[in-house]
Image (cartoon, rainbow, N blue to C red):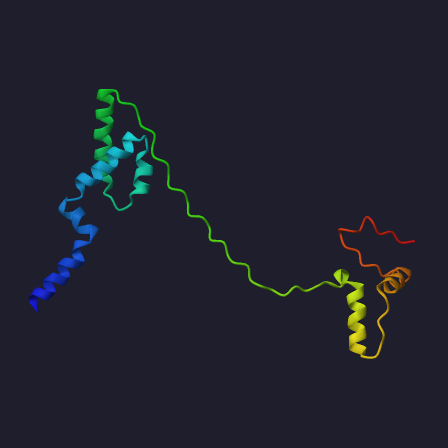
Length: 153
């Protein structure tokens, strides 16, 4: 039972970053982060932002060591690697919605046919007669597409 407890505790603590910082096991890694930031010309503030879990003192120590080394050997600053591209936004699939026609967009022939069907005994007029009647009454459906071509007297 005791062995099981120790095994579970050690497994949980193995992934903990805090232990590495307390014991000093991560100091070389944090110094390497600082040195890499200096070599690529990144500021300390940017390096701190990019690595919030790392110890700032160790990052500064690595940055300072690399700065002295680069000054002593007259090494140029390298270009930093490009930031990874941001993820593309997901395209939402279009939802099927029924098309609702506005009164101005309705076809006069269809309107006439629907009235005839609803009445049940009325005979539908020809489309030309229905359009002629609409023109005489002045009830011409005008859309933005054909607004310039329709003139009323």
